[in-house]
Every structure is written in structure tokens, then in C-alpha cells.
Image (cartoon, rainbow, N blue to C red; front, top):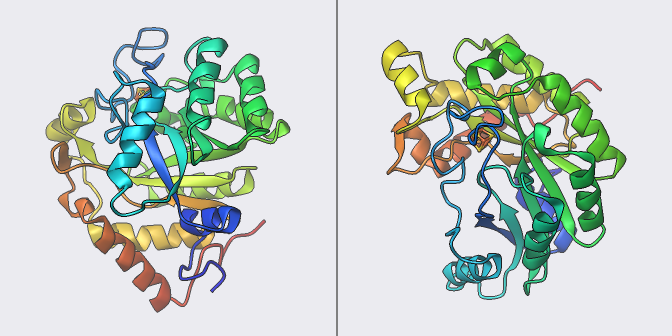
Length: 307
Ligand code: SF4
């Protein structure tokens, strides 16, 4: 198969191709906040966002970056004693600080032993020219990607999610980042209330034609304590069933540009914080079912992609 054992362009495949071995991500908390939470744009945040800033598995923000990396590596040590790592600044908005503070945190991360790359999650409205220049500088020193959670290309849905900016801003920043050769991973949420299948496919088709290097496909799930939980309990909108999601993901993969690396295809809730859907906790079973369905269809990522 084109991507080793998978019918889609997996991150594992891509990292092995690049580094010649398995690479692990270390989830870090850089101690940032988010303009969608501190009042610059809004106080309530995105409707699905928890008080952890969409980084449920990140390390302890009270530790220095170097200590977070060391403690995360220690957790992996029993299974992988000689791993290589990507330092992943995950929760809240990891470019939302003055450039000298950002530079120090990122440099601390990439100076750690066996850290071979940097992943930075942020928002399109927190990428001014100075930040982009810094990212360009870093991309010349290490393997780097920037993650932007656009979630949908539809501004109506973006408003429902309280994203806080329009898709056109994302397009503008993608162009600027790519002019500097910076790799971009975008997040899309599958199952947003009132989004039809047609709308989901429009997001996939649009992203497929942009100069974007990777995607995280998230099942919409409800985290306890979020405003989405309140909305769900009041409106009882329909969440995707497991079978429905698996079929939809296979349809999505068939349309998606085969050059785009798949970083995620499931929900990421933990059993302590997830309200629904519970089937998403068994990630292995979801991924296996996607493999099985693609095989049954004799299909693969990009089968119906038209450039
Ligand atoms: S941009 Fe990220 S951290 Fe900020 S509110 Fe939205 S999901 Fe939460």
C-alpha cells in the first residue's frame, strides 16, 4: 500500500519517512491564555472548549518547559527508552505573547535532548508578521508545524462555535505562512450542529485545494462543563453514531487530497470529562473500523480527489 499498512496518509507514516523511526509528541502547556477567553475577542471561548483550553492531556503549566519535557519523557520511558520527540505546545493559544517570550519557550523546547521538532497550536488571529518571522526562523532550525483550529470553512458554523474570526482570515494567514515555507495543520470538527454532509464535504474540498500539509479530523464530542454541554442538554441535537461517523470519515478520506497528512480521525475526550458520545472512548475500535470499511470499499485517501 502507498502508506505502508494504511489506506490513508498517516502521521506515523510521514514521521517515519522523515526521521526513519517512530516519533512521539509531548504535550506541553506553555502557560498562555487565549484572546477568545481573556476578553480581547471574547470571554467565553469557543463553545466546545474546556477550562484546559482544548489541551486535556498537556503537562503541568507550573513546571518549566524543560521540566515538562523531562516528565513527559519519563512517562514514556518504560515503553520507549530511546525515543525522539516533537514538543507540542497544545493548549490555549501558543503564539499569544510577545515574540521574545515565545522565542524563549520554543528555544527551551528544541534545546532538549532528543527533541527533533516543534508543533505549535494557535489561532489565525494570533499570527502577526513578527510571529510569522519567528516561526520562519525556527523552521530553519527544526522540523516545525503550526496548527490552526478552523473547524469549518462555513462562517455561519464558525459563529455558532464562537471561533471569533472568519474563514477569509485563515486563508490570508495560510498564504503568509506558506510564503515562509511553514507547514500548516488544520483542525476540522465533524458533526457540528446544523452542518449537513454537503457542508462537511465543502470544507474538505476547500482544504484539499489549499496549500495545507495536514489535518486533524475531530468527532464533535461534548466535554462536561463546556457551553456546548449546556446547549446539548437544552437542544438535544443529534450526535453522530459510531457507524455513521465511520462511513462519513471514509467518504471524507476518499475526497481528501492524498498529500495531506492525517494527524487525527477520532474524538479525544477522556472518560472523566466526556459527556457523549461514549463510543468515541474506544479509539482503537474506531480506527480499526475505518481500516475495515476502506478495505471493504477497496478504497483509499484521495480516490475521488480532483485537483
Ligand atoms: S481558540 Fe482554542 S483555547 Fe481559545 S477558546 Fe477556542 S478552543 Fe479554546
